[in-house]
Length: 443
Image (tube, rainbow, N blue to C red; front, side, top):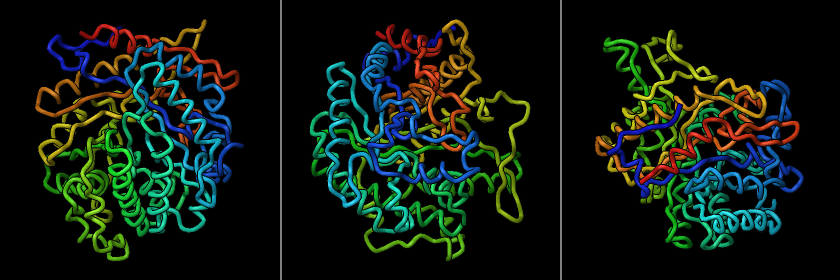
């Protein structure tokens, strides 16, 4: 099977950007060369990670990065989305860690030499533990620490970067980390989620100020994940439940950035759950962005629930990924078109899209046709959104290689490259070759 799109698709033109994506904690290892982060602590607490693993070595990208960049080049992509480990480049006293900065500068120089654009994410969930000890994202001061970190990094990297994203998926940091506690730092309480979210968004706005001043020639924005919410039935109660869930999980993060205000459901939340909003905060948060990064994997279906307003319905009799997520490409088109109707959007980049599948390797071959099928259907869904008027400029496959999949450890494989974690051998999967061949045939 191969990836194929209509002849009139914008995605088949050379102007459309294609890339692959990773995140620091998930691939780097090199734990001795950085400060401990919240994920190190979370992994150390028994029962948090499904296979009791950690990110100490991961894909050992810290030592194998040159080979990995050569592999990225062999896939013929235009861009590589990576994240910076905050605790690798900043010492505990806030001063630059020159060894860590040099690691990334060498990596960025190698990308430039390979003619691969660097899309740099400044925060992909690995908050230094010493900042968590002071309250983490529940402490407003962390937003200002992030601003200082951003300035050091941006000044050090100079003109090596094509694009910066301030944060990756603040929903996951806030909701999964500080509300239901299944991600680091593992804090549970409905009263914490929106407080953490507000400080994350404030950090984004403060970092945007730095980027505008010190890196005005890069594309500067943020990466948000969206799981579109569908009602179980045409019943008004279910429709309202899905709308509430959408505001709670999705619009909560984009609306303050684009419109400078939180969704109206803020007034329905108990006062103890409200974020602490200072005068001028929303003005900072709504700093203009050059682009919006959109991450999409699946949809969610909701029904009315008297106790909790809404409850999610488990997918039944539908195709699923190895994560148990419904494969629903129509949701991708629906999401992009809906966002474009609701907001005055800047240009959009699809910064993550992909699927965990139950891969097996035989004779150095991973024949992951189900993943090729996923990419084919979802790239066609992006094409449909463009034809409906959404200004989409690029697409990143998640992920470049199998890696540490957060609370699921090494049990789930998202990569278009297979990683043997014992030997660190990389094997390009059938999906990796299909992606490469599709990119090669662009007009």
